[in-house]
Image 1 (tube, rainbow, N blue to C red):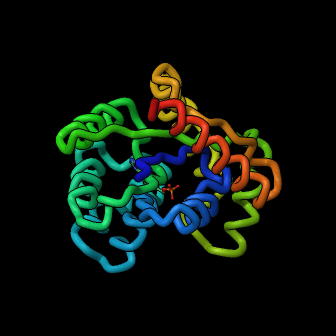
Image 2: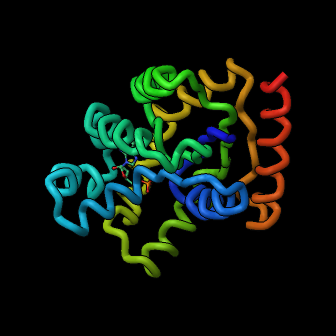
Image 3: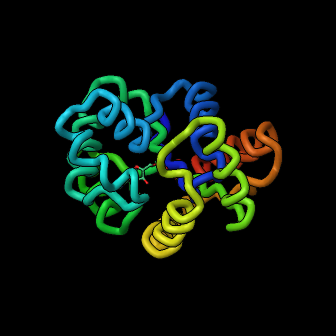
Length: 195
Ligand code: AMP
């Protein structure tokens, strides 16, 4: 049973790693970015509400995001474990998540931090913009998302690091190597916290 979080700046490859790891570990992947994009495409009320934030690279308000995650974590398929991708992204969300998990007597077991330098991120995301056509992959919006990551999300990692559950992997390495070190790191942290 694994309750995991993957966290990293936009363009760090965390989405790709989240797919691979959740598949290999047999747990569900919960990506708030993907959930918002699905709502957006289906024009649901939540999608309509989230659209302006996604387009400008801003964070959707905490209470909206947390409500969506709370509902997702109440489903049956998370009982075997889950990998959160992109949530929590603020200290307030982190506290919300702690409270949600505490309600079921649980806590996060390992946090995988994928690191990549700013210039490499901008280069990768501009490349992705040409391929996927995401509206939030323009240079200005990319730099804005990065700033939010440094200001709002990095403090979350610092809190988890104090709990001794953070594993850091170099996202600039090749994809297979990142997956392999991620798995090794997660196993090490989980073995440590299990004792
Ligand atoms: P991502 O695919 O993880 O880069 O997320 C894309 C966009 O979805 C972000 O730029 C935000 O607008 C929104 N989003 C995703 N996760 C969150 C979150 N935890 N809190 C607030 N907004 C989020």
